[in-house]
Length: 397
Image 1: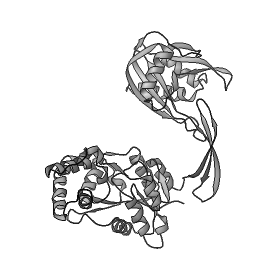
Image 2: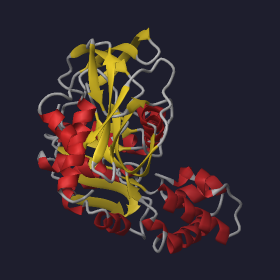
Image 3: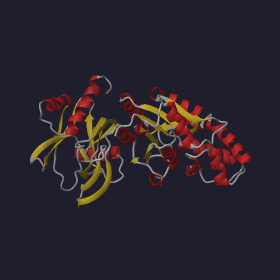
Image 4: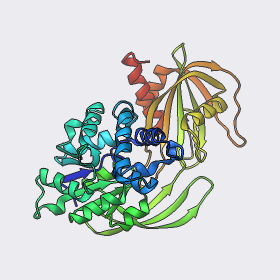
């Protein structure tokens, strides 16, 4: 089902504000000589109203809690508010939802003036139809009431409530959505607990903004069961039972892959390097850029540097991203990270045991021609070569 209206929480859902809030909470506690953990461990300040958190966690009186909140705001309004960033993917998600005609609101326990400053800072205000935060004088308004205000401002009625989705990162968001009879999507990348959100009635769970977008637009598939059917040295295969947005159940065959990295170099003489090796699935020699698979938890750039040195016997002064590639998104979760390398120094090749390949040094323009005439058929190599060629022609390399 497609949702026409989406109401977002702010902290932990659209914006990663944790550092500024937690440092400002520590600042307030220090001012009153109240013992506390390091600021990194003050995550419980994320979500609930500050006045309540100071009382519940530190046993202070209501009047002292008000003083703590005032001291918190002293730092937060000047410094803490800017210790924030949008979560990756939020900007493109909001842009897409608005392009599809969705009404978008924000319902947050954060003071409205702070929200509006951050919307302007991150240039997402044009995508938001209404903002419902709290005032400095009344910052303990229940989340259910804030959501109700936001829904009313967006024109939600009993008749169209089924087309509304609340998105948030805590059980408070789930409770608030349920109190208003509105579907709720929890996000796992924020500050709350996935299990608490589910226990409090979330209809969906999303691990990244892209999933929220898919849910809101009616494209999402909810995975209800996963059965591992094969474990190999590199890949794993599982059969998933999923429910489509229409409610129909179906199955998916998924290949889990650790991901890979590819490096395309361009030296000072306009030369690049390809490798040519036998690829068993195709029973032929294939031209590729130097590449390899990622080890668990490995940084893609560091892996790329390693593969470039091992396969080509070369090092580079500069690296920059050429983006990432999903080679077979219909059934495989592999992500290939692509980088360009410049400032090349040629050294000694160090191949892994059982690795046999030919390194070919050639003019970059010739590599582009090999893409266009079909000599290069590997997807990551085609994408990287054409991307770098575009940057080079635009004078950016």
